[in-house]
Image 1 (tube, rainbow, N blue to C red):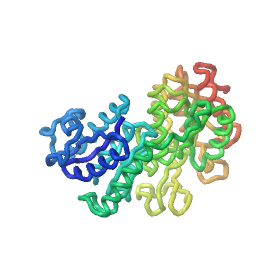
Image 2: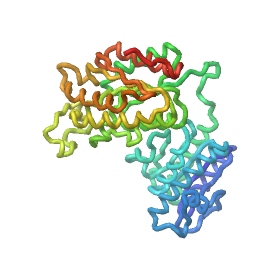
Image 3: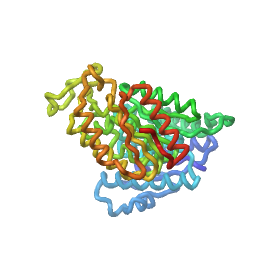
Image 4: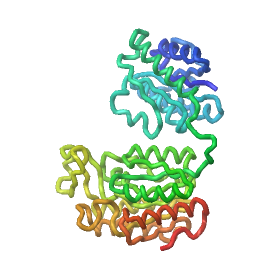
Amino acid sequence: MAILLVGTLDTKGIELAFVRDLIQAAGLATLVVDVGSVGPPRIEPEVSRTEVFARAGATVESLVDRGDAVSKAAAGVAILAREWYDAGRIEGVLAIGGSAGTLIGTAAMRALPFGVPKVMLSTLASGQTRSFVGGSDIAMFHPVADIAGLNRLTRTALGNAAHALVGMVKAPRLTDPAEAPRPVIAATMFGVTTPCVDQARAVLESRGFEVLVFHATGIGGQSMESLIADGLIDGVLDLTTTELADELVGGILSAGPDRLKAAIRRGVPQVVSVGALDMVNFGPRSTVPERFAGRLFHQHNDSVTLMRTTPEENAELGRRIGAILAEATADVVVLLPLGGISALDAPGMPFHDPEADAALFRAIHQALDDHPHVTVVDRSQHINDPAFAIQSALALQLITTDPGSEKVDS
């Protein structure tokens, strides 16, 4: 097995050779891939740019411009990286670069499962990195100086990145071999649904499940979807689907248009609820778009402004949830907490709006009632009521361990 090294060898060849030599000196094999497109490579790769572009259905001659070259290289190297990993050829990946090298290198990393060591030495690492990291476990290092030639700064930065990857690959896995494997549950939580998810998690853990909780802040939902897609999750307790509201309305915590879809595609059983769909998230009050003037807001703190969703938005959210879950081929239970869908949506609280909630519930029923694999159940409790949490956990236990059974009492 080898370490995959990704770089534009026309501009970063000497620097990637430095990394290659350090990794080989540590006793690990390397596989150097050229993703450049401008000049000739400054070192000889094991995999040429021709092969990379071919995987994306392109040739060097067919490239329109630099942007097209970067896009095609990212697509091609991602396909190759996954093929090599599935074939047992690579056990880690390291890339170096600026904006183009970072986009290409992290595309290869995101194609690999959680736990595969991934190191990106990038001049963009000190800024906004969400578009590069996504839901993956990429470690990004900032080189301080540009990665241009070998000098006292770049040698140190390149060396630290190389040695970090070597350490990740050589270190023993942090698992207890004596511990029996447990079914893995992915759960979603927000501050306003924490009591529910904590209670449900405790029930599931007491019954032999391992529960991974994801903070529904956009990147949390993306991370969970990625792990489900990788086949690492046995059941999903998706009680906090708030990221769908941000995707619909334009908040800052969207997890993208594929939220909810991984479990459907993989056939993973899931319990779904509507936690925190009463709110859309923004930053400081001054950053809320002007088009939302006149809406109902709650200032969570100086950095977080919450906006109440309307009956019309809730109805559309219900339709979207219904359209996604209607594709289910494995058991799905949708639990609707009629007493309120977040800590702010309860009698006397600022987002309490029975009309808006009813629009959400009605749309879900219309889309999913009579579905062969989906059971929609109304519960009288608030989402943070212990009884609702316990029912959620028991329903997921049932459909995870006994698929096709009578799923939940109404």
